[in-house]
View 1 (cartoon, rainbow, N blue to C red):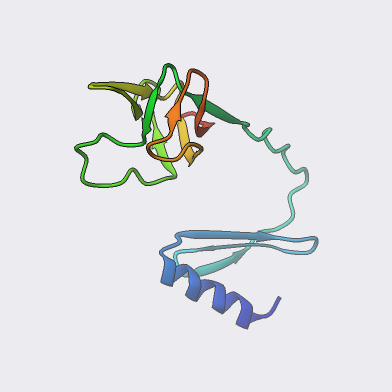
View 2 (view 1 turned 90 degrees about the vertical axis):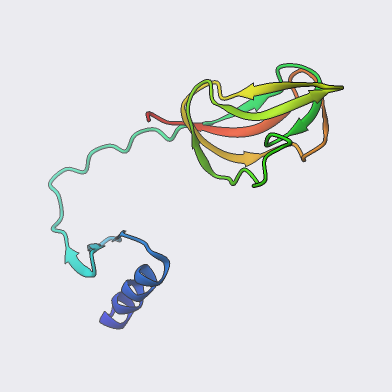
Length: 134
């Protein structure tokens, strides 16, 4: 790993607003933060990584045409985004009735599984949610 490589990583971090970068291989452990690079010594014992959280599928609680945002909203609901349990994450429209789809738990709403305007029945997958402790 050359100093030119490290310099290019620092430039990319600055360009894209990345605050911290960490790299580790068999021989080195490097942390870049605040425009500085630190080489971390080998630890005596590496702690076990926590088990990755599985994605949860948020399904339609009832029948309707799926809308990922309120019909009167002027901006799109960008993904991924943090959501809280009970937060409205979409809507199902049946005639004049607009019913909310709520987040079942805290986490990161990462992917929309149903297209806007699709007819959704009970249990139709709408979103992918990665649970998190917020």
